[in-house]
Image 1 (cartoon, rainbow, N blue to C red):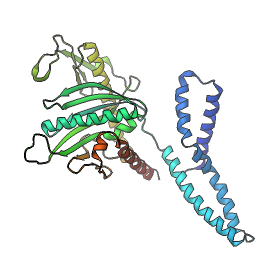
Image 2: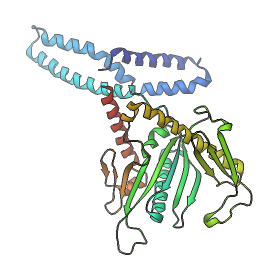
Image 3: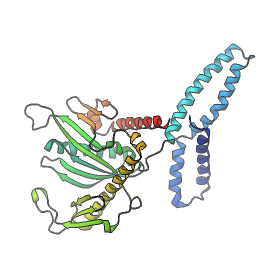
Image 4: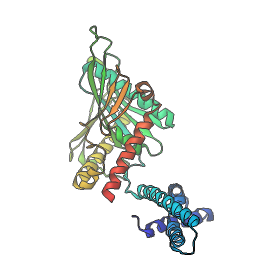
Length: 357
């Protein structure tokens, strides 16, 4: 049961923020942050106000039931109201518990998404491209900004690898569930016997780290420049514009050659490197705090098989929550992607609530 003091704190915080924001005296630097906090509290405030009334309402109803002077009809109505009150109280308490659950500090961040073709050769690269198109549609639907950082194309017209950033509101909190191995089962266009082949792609979703999130010393970096090359060794640039950055303490290496400018390639490579180093540190801390692992959906490991896209049967299955949607086309078009994401969020909340009790 939630201590009543915690709920009263929510109400007091909401009311104080309301006064502050309406006074017009809030520092402009803090206004956005306080407005966001006020909006967040606003989503739960009505439940909080009702929750604190339950004790007195329960007491009133119990007095009617125990009062010998009450007629039978009134007692019956009070007993019915008391049962409804208990159900309502439990519902509101669950909502408040979810609101009070510890939040991932990175949920508000933008994200860097890396999709790599896995087992399955050229078919895997085509699947990699299909996944990228799916995320493009999800971003368009949600009015998020997607920006390609680098692409390595395959001979079949797919992608060996694609790295992109996504910016907007609460990006990482949504996309973090996409990390892992995505498997596809379908008949390739080149298959003459009509056999179903299985291919895979690996997705890594990193919270986009700002300079304030993690400090990377210049002395910890080794920067190499080289001449960019195209497919099959074809030269795409006659100058040393490609950049390879190695973070010596962690061994993280990032190469970037998509831009003709060495300066732009270096900036893109640093953006990816910062996020990879930040995520590596985050994983290390999560493993040290075993409770965080218990609160997660799946292991969070990139090698974990999380989802299967079966084209002959027109279904997509998420193995972490055993959910199957027989609407593969709609899922790949981004139309019902949120349906699965919502189920993943609810499952994670359920795990956290069980660990909280």
